[in-house]
Length: 371
Image 1: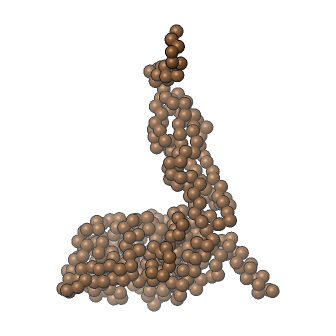
Image 2: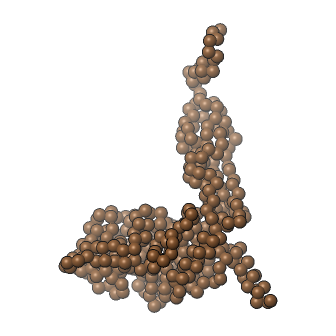
Image 3: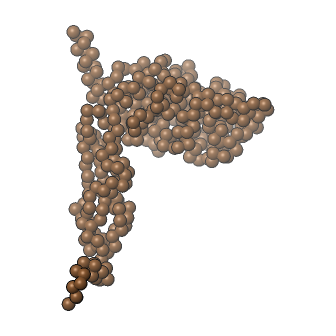
């Protein structure tokens, strides 16, 4: 009986803090909802740890944000023979940036990482500075990149929380999503009569319904690391497990319980009218206010968020279409989940004598002579 009671107590704690799941086998883990970033489950998520080739999520993001997909990228001497996983670039071999990124994210090519870093940053050191700076922009306070590939290096670390935020940002890039969700691709191979055929190392893509990617990683120092994502019924989840021997099963379990416990609730759709607000001294008596984006957030299946509308009682003319005049927020238990600007749907210029006269004439009864 004591064991049962203790188990129920532990489950209740986890239900309060996130997904109702037993502690994972990972040293560190997290599960978030992709749109709002709401944390659904976390375990030791803020401990700085090595992250192996999950580093390459940021490598790809920096490349996509600062390069062109069709840019020719030439492998220099520093890219040739980098230890670990490789797409076997030859010195002087050239692929497009997009092809290099497929080699980076599917086959985890360390040589491709160096080639991309030198192409974008000029040097690996400068590229890593760009990576760290971008992480700070995203809000990652415990991430430092020393390499573009994730091979062991002093000071190279992140946290599960930071890595989830990096993945969340990267997954907003359509080209990144396309690359990491690809299971197999063929790339040209200089000096060969056949192409490179690269298969994605992320087994979830073929084994887990709704899987979207993202990146595997392994070194002896970091252990097995996995950043993963999946989507079902409008709910997209992103997770991280660091130093996790049973990485794919643990990822699947976290996703299963996330989808079982949570749902995406949309209270207002983009463009939906929220209210008509009176306009003083305007060419119209009121202006329609609409949501600038979907007001949506993840909540538990048995819960419903509170909608808080913040709008003024009236507005002075003149008003331009698309002007932000308020906000709509969803809250759950006092926690703000998402805040969306509310904007005007129409122009309302200031009232003039001519416009005032037009309104009078338009309202005048037909067939009744004016005095």
